[in-house]
Length: 235
Image: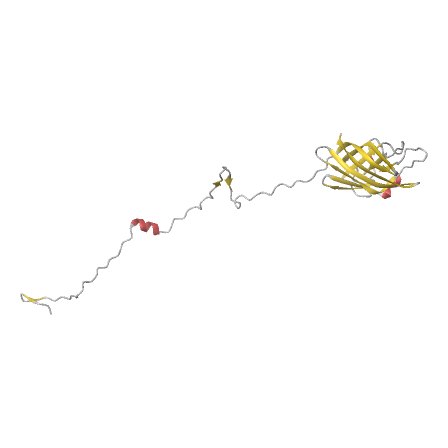
């Protein structure tokens, strides 16, 4: 019980130890703003970096790299002045001639497929003036300049890039539109019609031509071979 002062009784509730003060620490305005959820905004644009030399670096995902353009070999047509060096029959020879390369002559009426291009090798006039190495060898008779023959397909033609391969069609050999001679003796000379083998010709953008021919021909006197290297320039 508390003491009595002047007839008044005072009551108190006291503890031996003072109670510690408790308080809440208010959040400063700046801190409150920082804890608020961020407002929605547009996504940031990608940053373009620069290298030391000033070239910009572009993200591969945003600008996918384009595949380099593919290049294909091209076959170059025209008329070429060529040198033919080889062996006809059993005799070596070197002579001049021409190789003509042109667009497809006959697209209908062929028995050996449509030629992608037409090619002919001409040197001399074997049927009228027999000489060692004289030759007419064409994929189509209309390719031979001044031949005046019908447009008869006489060979199989394949093109691979800048190279063309011509193989004689044995079934048409009897027409003698393709032929070669191996000597210059009017009495003993025979005209040989190619029945097998091939001629390969390659051209380039600088106008150079290279190739070879290795064929076997037949005549009433038997068979003969014609083998030669061909090189020249576009006329």
